Image (cartoon, rainbow, N blue to C red):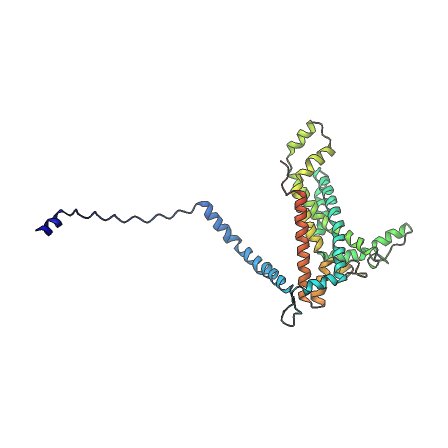
Length: 318
């Protein structure tokens, strides 16, 4: 009886909780769908960059520490290639020549490009024709341009010496003289690259706010004061872009050197890219050429960071 009474007085078990519904998955908003669509659209370009840029860069960095001549397997040599560069007088001279070439072509080209852009922005007559003529060398094959300048610099019947002969001046052998070869190559570099600089500056000038210039004119600011106080600061992003692209282009100059001087005379116009080409495709020292390429990359990166630091970023003044 006691056990029965205990069972009768035990409270009933509480009912089991009903199963909870699974949490609903959050819906993807239009922003997430656009990001996914954007990633899908740029995926082919990313894959192309990874295969044809990323893989060669990684391979070049690896080969820079090896001895490799294409015919045999790479052999790890550590820093030997970089030690050889320190003892390579020709490569050291190529670095100096590249710096000299860059020092003259980049600033002079930027100044001339800005002046031409300012002239074309002022409503010059037939500016479309002038703009096309100035930009044409930029889209013309460098080899064709070099061949034309090869005729211009011809010491016998070239254009320069023919014009000098009209004034009774005997022109030099421009590309065969150690004194005149580098200035001649620099002139070609400035002339060929001025079109892109002009176009970028012209596009930037046409997007400057006109109300600032109207306010400056009301305050009595002269055109010269407006140029230095308004135009130059507002062109700061464009100037930084032109500077970096011009530096990269100058350091990678090869075609005109190969056609005009072949690095001569006596190595007076040899550049870093030309020495890399010689090491890889004439001497088959691919590992050494990759080490030279790595030095070129480090120099370009260093110049870019220094320029960014000097210019204080790329944002213009508000």
